[in-house]
Image (tube, rainbow, N blue to C red; front, side, top):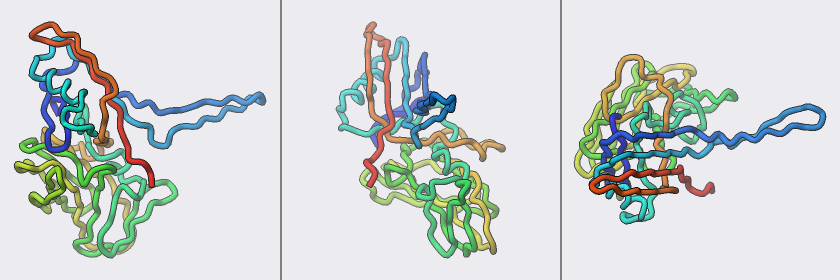
Amino acid sequence: MGSLWIGPPGLMREVRQAATEFDRSVQIGVEEFAALSGGVTTTRLATPPRRLSLSWSALADSESQWLEALARNVYGPGPLVVIDPASRNLLEGGQSQGYGPRSAIGNSGWGTLIERADHVLTLTDPRDNDQLVYDHSHWIGYPVTAGLPVHMAASLPDAQCQMTFYTATEGFVSSHGPAPTLSVVPPAGAAFVALRVILRAWSGTKPLGPVIMRMGEPLAPGELGALGDGCPPMSVTGYSDKARPPHHDLTLSLVEVRRTPR
């Protein structure tokens, strides 16, 4: 990705000007405890929320108005889609490497999908046309925007990728594939893409291995193992605008939001 894309599902816009400061550090939430005996233990959040902090100097008025509208909830309370320019793979980290949690990848068909003790996901005895479904944790699929190409590839031998596009209200738009490496320009009205991997039959057990999905530039050889950055829904937590007409010095902070566990 060459630019930041941000907005509600189905209404993302590109912010072409590069941020002068861009912090996507993960706050891992580790707490350290030292016992009087000298022992040291740590605790940490299982899945720390992701945060973004961006700053622009002399941002154009048209782009600053869009960010202000998002900060002021003009288009609703959110959450927002944020595709940052450093994203290598929009799948979650575990999904991108064939690791758990098991709930992040569904399977349809005869094969048995399990998460081993080392968190590797394996599939046993699938039949032709069994499917792996790479679910998004919040939406019906991964957010997309019309006209911005989506690319997908999987590492399992003979695996075929498939994309199904939906509107912001979860209406069907179109389906594409299967193909070993799939590149599709989302049609008008598309807001989400559901990702599937179509399998050929095998006997025995195999690990799922890496999968990649990203927008923008086509996939290059050797990128299939890229660690997933995820594409979490986010909410604005901080905003400032120091206007210097016709430009703006602007900062924006966002945090990942999650559904309440059931």
